[in-house]
Image 1 (cartoon, rainbow, N blue to C red):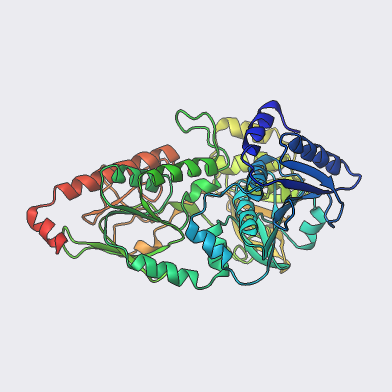
Image 2 (image 1 turned 90 degrees about the horizontal axis):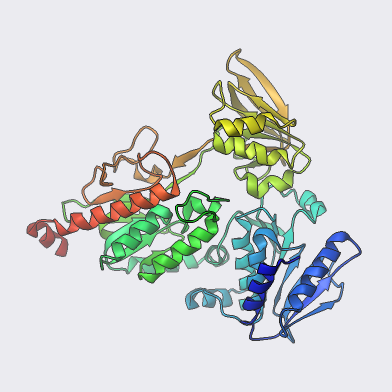
Length: 527
């Protein structure tokens, strides 16, 4: 199953194994089991530290356990972890084999200190870019703490389980047989959910920090670029972010990042995080800003209050909180979120194979989603509010060529319908004739753009009617010493490369602001 390049790379990685491991397979006579057996045989042949044995002792087949020889330390995959999960497989081989992780010692101790027995199961799809982080986080936790176990389950192979557990969105995480969480999670997020006291301890630690010269709020491309440019000036820089990487973590394919022909969101975020770390930036992850309290005088300290109860102070603040998927805000949408209503066709599309779905939105993202889904599902209904689709002409031509796609324009979705457990349809109003229609279906993919994350800034910085932060050509907001960059601002064209440029500009403007403060303003700051 491995091509020449993958084989060479994997052989190099396996040289880092320091403790022998076993690949313990549970197989049947099916084609998938033969495929998995071939993969495991290839892996075992690449290192003297890896052996393969067949025991057929697990109820899920095909599956296999990666186990440290002579111990109970290990992780299990049910299915074939290729595609986006190949990296998860490689990391599991290394970590079970004793290769150290990149977790901080503080987080490792938190994982070791969890009190209880935790049996995790994660359902993933091979096309899901959000799933690997969850799989890798829980795999690593099970290696660190013997009271934690984890099985990563490929939903496409175990469709009966997906149906019985009513899984309509991945990653779907179960703990001790009960639903635990949906969506992307890091080790830190899982630990915070299990250890209820961790939030208070983190808040206490944050509260004791000295003021920053530059505090960046938000860890997406704009925030990362701002932090790097600020830290390069030799000034004290911090980032407070709900999740480092922001919306880019949910981006499947990036083909317009200059000098990089193709990459994926999670890979780009990993590189951003590494770059930020090289400059010693104080990154405070899992921190949601709740209020901005501007300085009372020019040169004074601004305060950012966090949802955890802690607060941070800084000479200058750069707002880069980005944007999130826009919701339809119709009855039933929230009730059936992850029960048929979803926002990621790449992640969740495979779960709707052979079913009827709708795509809401006729821009590029909506039409691209409809095209992708048409190859998987039985039928796609694309619903657009305007009288015409807004996507590029080449995408519209491709869409029109697909026999299982119906386009409905001048239509306003009015309600998501369901049976209490999952989506069964939707209602829309024909805007030309003011008539109501219903469509029977099992899934709804919402693709209607983004909304800026600025609710917490109401009555502080000047915002537009759309909620975007108003900035000038230097990234300055309406408050002296407070700057902004990226998708959260009025700057047009929400693109990664533009966000990075705007974040960098905001950092340079913040530094310029500080060095130009009058002596009496500097004195006020020192006081």
